[in-house]
Length: 301
Image 1: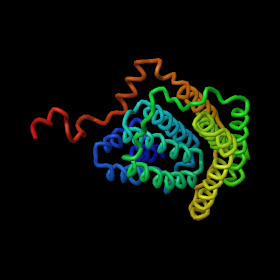
Image 2 (image 1 turned 90 degrees about the horizontal axis):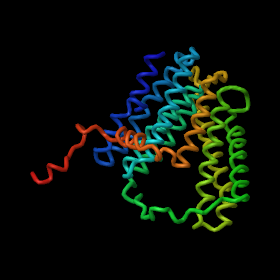
Image 3 (image 1 turned 90 degrees about the vertical axis):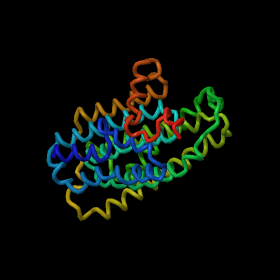
Image 4 (image 1 turned 180 degrees about the vertical axis):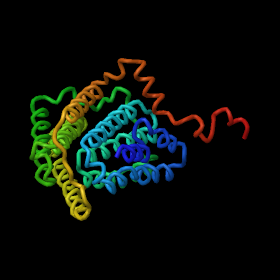
């Protein structure tokens, strides 16, 4: 089981084996799209094929959860310090693959497959359209609203809670005291983040910021629930694809780490440490040997 987990970590470019994926950033954009939308999924597929083996041992499943969560958090931190679009997308893939592997560790292998399918379409589109993603914004981000206020907080809280309910109803996970609770809590946190991003945009009319957020977020969660249910039905004949585990201290630590990381990134606390900021920049750089053109070679042409 441990060997399978290690192979999956390498194939899906989880930290600390993410170097080969970041190195693909130096390739032409279509090649990067293929790497990030296709090749990195091999780790998740490997775990699904050997689900009965890895799910037989709780320690192995907890190790998968820890490895996936660590990669998801580190990938997000690396993305925050990237200045170029392709670099941001590459580090985003590291985080997304970590979350996918973490879902497998929670015992929901069909959720991991649904994630890799949706992420593949999304990331391929993002890479192929990366040339149009350059935003011309002021450094102070002047379209931010000064404060959400009581109405904004209420909309955020209600939308997040309803998002968790919709996810539980459509997916059927999180209703019992097992690892499904972790997945539901992370969905609620995701809805909080997305809702705050929209509510905090002063450029949008108040009716859109406060009224349309639930109308968009909740159907989106329902669509994901539908995809998850369809994938689970297609995989129903495979053994061990739904193997939720009992809640442990590891699950509590993972949820706490996600909460702390969200607050830290939202407040920009990582910028207060120059050492951390520089370390993240260095970790997110592709290996020098993979850079196809060096600046000092420009005069040799």
